[in-house]
Image (cartoon, rainbow, N blue to C red; front, side):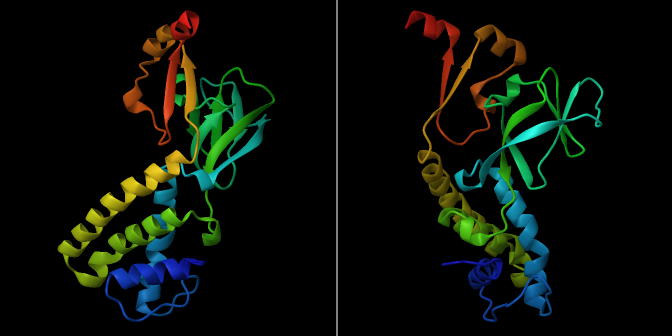
Length: 218
């Protein structure tokens, strides 16, 4: 069971046929350590941002910042230092229906209070907090990113991405099943005005869409 970034890296190296294990990517000395150090953080950040991982979702209260300004927005909130991706604002996951701006490390809004409830994907570096499926995908993506450097063969890269395609579908499906469906209620007129469609919904877990008209007829 992987417990450290080095464990993840060594498993990725196994997939690439590298027999020499590494021992450190914080202060790398060997060639293998330097390549793993070059790719690990970027691959981790990419994969955390790619999906709404249950283990990585966190929530907090953000106080209004009275100094930061952005044209067209009245309210500013400083993003957490471990912010990776936005999930919801004041409990609203239908982000396409919210007029907001992410810029310069801040979230900008109009007409919100002195603080907001903020849900997001956070950057987690402790491997022991990762879901086992996430560890598997991180290993595969890391191997794919390093494959050409170690093997100089495009066929190896393609083989790894085929493995990712198969494993990713299964892992994301399991992760999504561990949360109840998210219920998003909207006005059909507001939905049309904002151009909101099911196709551009970003969430990976099941979603139940309910219009005001549906509620009225039930």
